[in-house]
Image 1 (tube, rainbow, N blue to C red):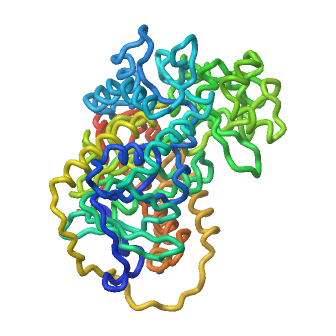
Image 2: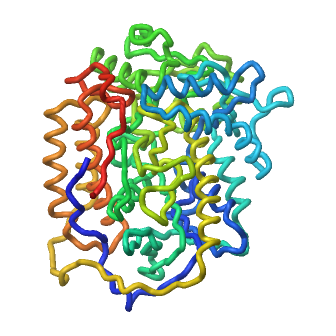
Image 3: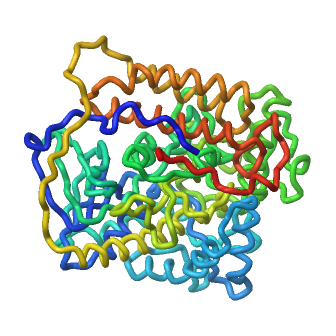
Length: 536
């Protein structure tokens, strides 16, 4: 599917003769699990620059609670994990991709242990739990409910201090640099040095997700779809952009920030009840609380409509208090901060945007359609998740493709001789003009509200049309302006990606996985294929 070209190829004005230049063999953009795992694969003969939008430890990966899925139980089998993934993916997974990744899962978990990650133990073995959509207990977890924090600690400790690797924190990637339809690095910005050209033989994109496009989300503030936007402007193919996964259980305290309540809570036996105390999941799916996330999210939304109540509740009161203390210390503390005493009180929850399934198209080795650019993690579409990601397959995917992209970029860069000729690039901006200042916070809030309302858990043609018109109107006057702050560039990226998501949602006239059209509620077998978006 073709879509209109962005109003500007580059978000910022620059002149290559007036911008500082740095040179690397491999540039890695993003420091979540995919980016850091990629960095560990780069040959020590190569010079590497790793760019982090915020602190290196702040990412969706670090926020992950549940764990990493992998077959570690003798009573389980790789084929079971593959089948569970395929069923959740609702006809859009690539079986070869699924089988390769789930087969690699035990090895990838063992590698994390070698890097120093400490998983929770039970009787001398890695403790395993069960989550929605899984037929067996196969979720390895750490620190109870803070797996991402522990995994990222181990990986970051391993990558820090590598002599050929430089980490640039608090550095925003404005755009990828391209010449003759090849990626040649990126233009980045930080408050101390301003803009810098980073020329690289190979670039790996690992910028994470897009949850901040929605009013209700589990994602940190940094998840503003930057990687999706910069890849698209550079000419890379994107696909499945209509597929945003909503997590069913996000702590709902009016006026507060949202906090994820891990699926593992339901995996350990918690019930979902509505405002009247009725356990309702049996009305929607025989798997009850452990149905796939798309089903549970829609069920919660429907039950909220029926009861005219702003949330439903997780009931853990029947679970042993010791289990809550051992498995969910972080969740217990967050609830205590709001005056909720687990396991005595109900936990108010409602769905929120959680994981961006769509993204930059990659092959099994992490290659994108743009030569010189590799990608891994949530910024990609790899065909593992299909139309609905199976719980705890996300960290697994980041590890698998991070490792693959790191190896591929490293091998390719080694074959390219040092010849860092500076290209005579310039931006396509007209002379600067004085313009009225915009309220960026108000614009972002308005964007996230209309995306939640019209492009959220339930969608239909009229709402998508209204959203398309409104977002295009905002984009018309926002994306023709030159900003000099991260907040402005983030807003421009979000407006672009919102339009890609809306266009894809309009194109898919069926319901499949996380994409639910109330005007096309049935699944159409003829539409069991990817929707791709490109500039040409």
